[in-house]
Picture 1 (tube, rainbow, N blue to C red):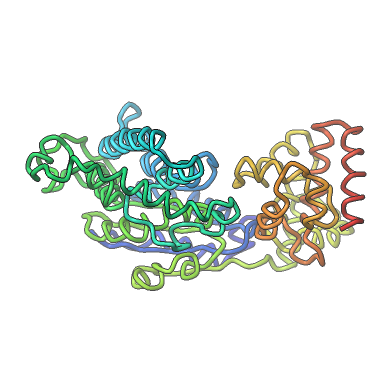
Picture 2 (cartoon, one colour):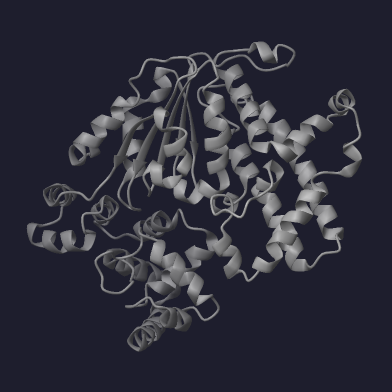
Length: 457
């Protein structure tokens, strides 16, 4: 059963998002939200496969949280995901984002310089570590950081036990990113030696990043802009005239790119000579995901769709189509709870090959960081996920941090259980996966540890 049948209304609505005629400077924002595992990415992927936006003149760029090594750092996400090295259609040997590369290179040089000066500063190691972290987020290059959760996760800093060092780190890095010897140099001289560009990196990083990215996009989609007449750039790619920007996993990417997107990029796209369509996928509705969408960009938001659970008759039809017998459907419905992610995984599970288990593990943990991914399998051995059972099962991990993460990880938890616990089918399948991975003896020993820890919780 295809997505057109299981979600006909939502499928048709998302299909219509691609029907608007192109208009220079127009920005259309669409939101697709729902709990983890509800099928947001699956729905959009199927629509895109049918629409084939490239044949309608769209350049499609997708930003997601799949590479956990990039999370929390603005510039790596900006350079690697906003500016992919290869474009289709496009020449395979052509880098269509030279201005982005220039900014990334200059930023890296400046960051390295400040990191070196941080290391030499007469401050505590805690202050230096916090300063380095703040620097890598890009926020201190952009502006002084207010004590705001929109910019900085103060709770995370408290958990690190570093709250008392935070103000010192902000002051130190702010001082180091504004070299005194640059202040007396006349403006024209700064321009000649490139200091004004570096000053913008320090004081207006997001604005500069938006300028450079849209400059490359304009050359790619519509040709030279008047303001770029003295620059050497590439020719437009034939057949492309408009932008499709897909931001997936917004709740994961938010602290890395949300301010750049809402404060700098969206306003800049409104001044460009091409049409921009932005689709944002996340667990929260757009108005809840970031305050700017409601306060500043609501006039650009064309539609917000929130996905719910699959109706039982739809899920039963999908199980029948996958080859399950009628007497199995009740158990499958109970285990999947109507989540499209679980329904589709159960449909794929027919056969239970080793490759299936590998794919299942990768698919259920793909959006997790390396640390969180290391917690998933041990938690599957617990009937009750509590601070005490976590401590018994993961003695080297901070139990409070593990519990805080798991309690928010809706794609893994059983939402109907009395206790926090991994969803039944995910749990059973991951335990089968781990038994094949570590052997029956070690698996049995972990089952005993998990049973004791759960009983004592």
